[in-house]
Image (cartoon, rainbow, N blue to C red; front, side, top):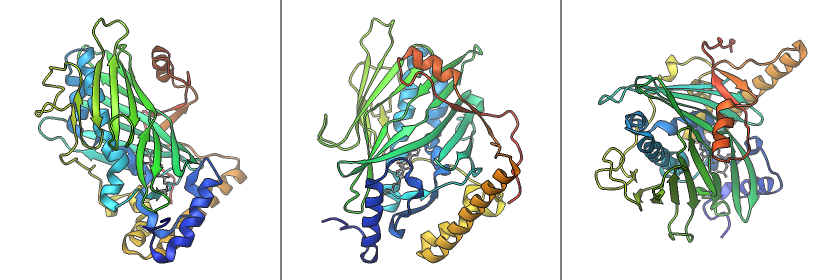
Length: 388
Ligand code: HCR
């Protein structure tokens, strides 16, 4: 029955929301959704999902050769998917609509040094408001592992589910002891948000994504839901090959939400879990450590949204809506002032490049389309935030 999971008083607004999505494609962030589906978390927090298993991120540079490092990158990547795509269902009961970040909103965090893995730091900046684009930089300096990327979405409606094409890419940089940097281009899968008629949305992945290394190793990952190659939700099959290798490619199959196993001979103890799995995300993950709200500046996400988030969490939606309008009006006013003054907003932590040279080089190696993409690169020294 449509709307079965929608609270009684919100069925009408849920239907209107779905109609708005169906008749419209592109930027879903501006549509108003009923309270039951709102998340108190801003999209600027999402890049933290890349590092919730910091030991796997740190371990990448411990690989003893190109092949082993490519396997460690694939293992880390697959192990992030559960957090990225199904943690809202686990924490909040369904997929939810995140808070739409404002231009210049930032989110900082760390994963402390523990068991010799080194400290990892996260810097996120909202670099566009409409359409929303989020840039991020995650670095474990002591292990020489850095991930830099940006994320945007293009939404459409098809066959009863919301299809979210991901725009953007990430570049992983692994600094080797020799001083040479190995690079990996990571492209992103397409999301299929199912269960929307019922009002209990969850994300399934579809299509494919790739990880192309400057060493030549190429991982191609295919995503399927229930009823395809395994009959199980959240399934994937990854094939890791090198154009000059005479060996058979490595093949890994399983579920990104639980475990996966190698289908070919991988003997390295650095790569496999103790139980022989390639990935096993049944154990706990480690959320990013963030300063308390009192210690945060006015542009830091949890501080900026604190009244809205508290309203959503406690069910005080009037207060949430009022403060959300205040934030949005302030944004509109800033853009208006800029237009009148003939100025524009400066990015604070990142520089935008129209053509990311590392993307181009790796895309050419892996025959990835498009051949070129824009990118965001961390500045040597950030600009200060204007007052708020
Ligand atoms: C599509 C989505 C916003 C974007 C979220 C992204 C793609 C952001 C980058 C992360 O690395 C991975 C990621 C995970 C999320 O699954 C994805 C969100 C899921 C829902 C949300 C929509 C804008 C909300 C649609 C409203 C629904 C719940 C009815």
